[in-house]
Length: 167
Image 1 (tube, rainbow, N blue to C red):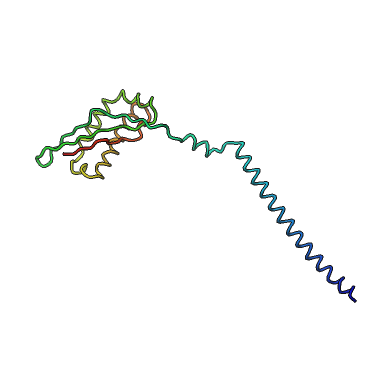
Image 2 (cartoon, rainbow, N blue to C red):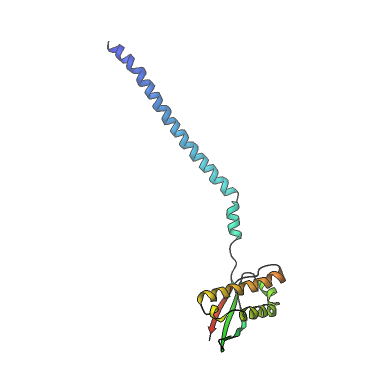
């Protein structure tokens, strides 16, 4: 009788053992496929440059070039019958030396446009930090407009106030 009981248990044990072996083989196969796919993708990326990486390398900024505009700008204001003035020293920030040199040819136009823009601003507005920042942005727009008109490109990146005096 012992033999008959063992023969009944053996098929069940063999069935469970087969299922376990199939699960283990399946897991090993899935792990192997994921490792192989990862290895393939990594080596494919090394052989061919990624467009995003190439674009990022192209966008690396060039060295900054600072060009001071001398002499400083002086603008007179009449505020409630009292004479006031503003003196501002400006430095241009550019990235391309050749474009900046081409823009220097048009410096009389730039200085004229800046003086006209400065003199048209209300004194009370430019006396505040927000007004000063707005004035700096307007000055950058004036210089960029001349660059765009004359050279068909925006040559300067920023206009920096290196000295700003109101009296």
